[in-house]
Length: 470
Image 1 (cartoon, rainbow, N blue to C red):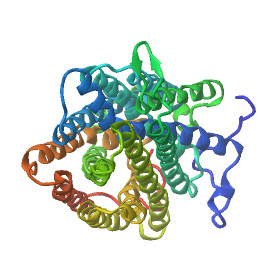
Image 2: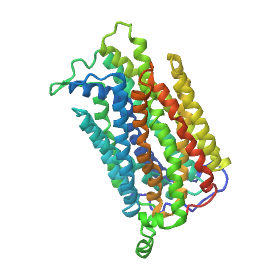
Image 3: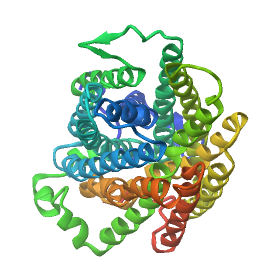
Image 4: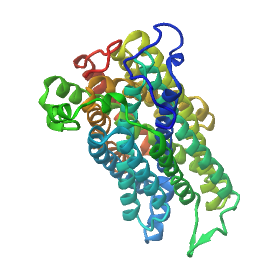
């Protein structure tokens, strides 16, 4: 297998002391790198959407004869995000099953190709309808990638190194978000200085948001590496034909027919829904709140609309950068804390911190300087939960259901979570429409969702120090 034969199975450990990374051989590092890149590029494509959806919708709605108000943009952005999350959930269901049936590596290849190509197609949108169709299709690939990636890493890594490797995998996803933010900042500055004014393709002036979506197709190149060198985990390969027939890999009937796996799946789904709604229904609308703050500050500047759009795009990129710098450290902090406290106590602390920090930021973010300390704090607290998901969910299910169960928890939760952005949009455009900055009030109102995660914790098992189920 291209120089990587003989990689030890996940249950083999060489030392019980010393740094976790010393237990990894060359193939372990290769698997972690490929899985991290797949998830990193996945989150980059997600963040491109978060940073560009308002600009994209403003242009697309205007081009189709609609003069969008601030409230209307908030509402349509909520709808677009909900459709994206529904695609994410659908992809999670389909590719989670495929990951158990045909293998982790093959499924990862398919998901990366789908989310890359469909992100690129988003650049050619002409109206709201085709834009959200492309977002739904992108969501299919995004939804499938996480479950097969964490299943692959969990099954290949030595047992003691497993939670640390999974935490690092999830922490590196913040690098994808940071990459998207840096690109948004660069293109926003270029647009503000008029550098894209004469960039016209097929009669359409190309704005920064379209260029970002074109860049989003580049992760497809990773598929070449996956196809050539990545092999399936030994745990998955070692299932015999008789075992596959008896255990029914990737079967939802098997997942819900067993009381233990059913309880873990439902509990994990609720646990994930709280964090996903908190992030996608509240936290990832922080750049849009900052958009409103910035436009108000530029209202009397005398700048042209193009310059204002470019400056806002640049500073929204900075806001995403700040959020994800905090996220990187928050995710890895969860990894270190859970090593000592266990999974459930770490989740409890993270949910309380996420709720408190989000309320504080949405209520108080109103000054330029707040960007540099409030936003990283919220990113640290909100995204810490996702480090927990990467570590905890593979520990809840056996090999023949690991991808299916992990995907069910993490991705099917998006069917519920898809309501979050739409609810935020409706609160913004209807309930709090008479307020100066309605999104501020809508975000604070929705923070009660973090309490749901706290309430489900007593019903979930503690898995710290236990081997993966078989």
